[in-house]
Amino acid sequence: MCLKPVIARSSCDEAIQTVAADAFLDCFASLAMTETGATAYANRGAAGSEIGFPHETPRLPFTVTDWSKVEATTHPGETGQARWRTLNIGDLRVRIVEYSPGYLADHWCDRGHVLYVLKGELDSELRDGRKFKLTAGMSYQVSDYGDAAHRSSTTTGATLFIVD
Image 1 (cartoon, rainbow, N blue to C red):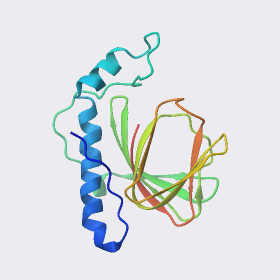
Image 2: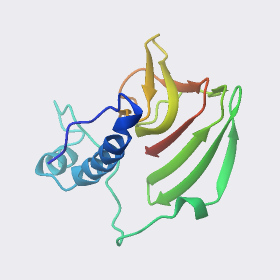
Image 3: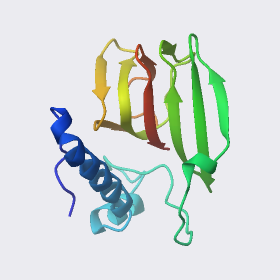
Image 4: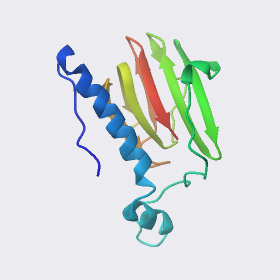
């Protein structure tokens, strides 16, 4: 059972926010094991199907990742830079991404993501003009070509956990 997200409203709520992050990740990981998730995956692309997954979670043993030991790669933006620590598992990409203050992506993205803000503030802009500000403890989810293309920016810097 997935817990409702908890948004920290003060520094006193930091412990709650940490629990919310764990609950979010547990929720995401369990999606592939639910009957609804399995049915949606099996029916992807079927006539009238509203839900589909671009790929299934590859089989792998229980794996612990020490992100501090994953080599970072630098990706320049239009302004600023992104540092990615990436774990590739088949078609699945799991990343910790750090955006420098003043970062603006150099492209519009149509790829699907589950994105969770670990710290800082992230501005997500959709090509159709909609804008969203995400802060620590917030997430967005979008499928491949599931909405208008999006791009990220931040004035203060941000650290993200992204699965795509």
